[in-house]
Amino acid sequence: MRSGARALRRIALEGLGWLLVLGGIAELILPGPGLLLIVGGLALLSQQYDWARRRLDPLKKRALEAAADGVATWPKITASTLGALALLAVGFVWMLQIDPPGWWPLDDKWWLPGGWATGLSIMVSGLIALALIVYSYRNFREIKSHDPTP
Image (cartoon, rainbow, N blue to C red; front, side):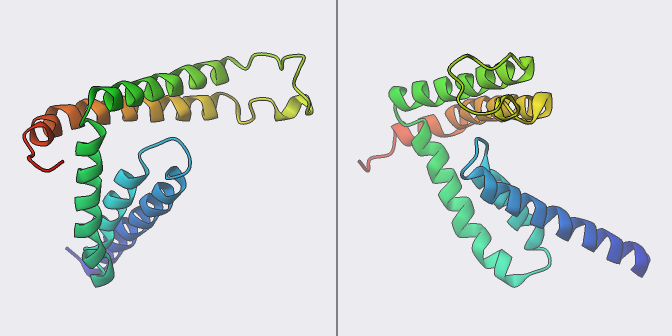
């Protein structure tokens, strides 16, 4: 590979890595798979930086522990599933752009801001959450149920 193409590839992967890390940090607060995005971003950055490589393994371990813990009991699975379904419902309502209700105290422009794009991103977050619940259940439920530690 030529040095120009190699440099372009490096810049693109590094930019994507930082984008995933920053998006993951935002999604720790917003609905979405924040920890997963951070791990993905650090995986890309770890190809270039030692500091990212050092942080990747502990964070990956913590993400896998959280995934196993999230499907440890049926109440947790039920609550997670209901939360993901609620995201889908909120996103759907957001996409409909219904008129503000009479009790809405602010200007109408502050009712469901962002339009269909925001609603779609909320729905995608709900679908990702459902997929992660299924993935965690299939891959970690047996491990957690046979774990002798309380």
